[in-house]
Length: 196
Image (tube, rainbow, N blue to C red; front, side, top):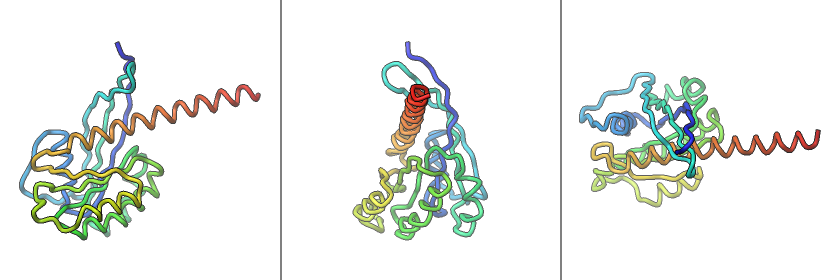
């Protein structure tokens, strides 16, 4: 039977307004989709508990808080300190039908990483179900992902395609980094004790 560990984590979604951040969260947390668009005012926090395996003998019960921040640019500078601080991972979201939303991530991502630090960053190209109206080629996404060393995925909050996979990949990366950091600290403590 695996050892159970508990972990509280924070994931923040960022990107322009109307790209589907709220819909992605709603699809992942509630498995629902709402056709009508409602602007996020300020920040909305959703919570979900996940069981994330780590190796053969550890299961992490993760309490994941998902922060959905308003996508208006003027708000970006006002909120960055408060909402990015303490994030264990970030998801940068753009809309496959809006080229501007992809290029805006060149501003959103560095702003978030400056506060959050070296955390996992995933790029989601949402509205995959509207691929017939796509506004940019895959190569543009690949270039952005390479710039930030980030994996990326094409998702659809409407159909649910790759949404759960993307959030689960982030959860696994959060757990993996937490355990690697813990192991590195243990090694460092051991070395210091040997020296002293």
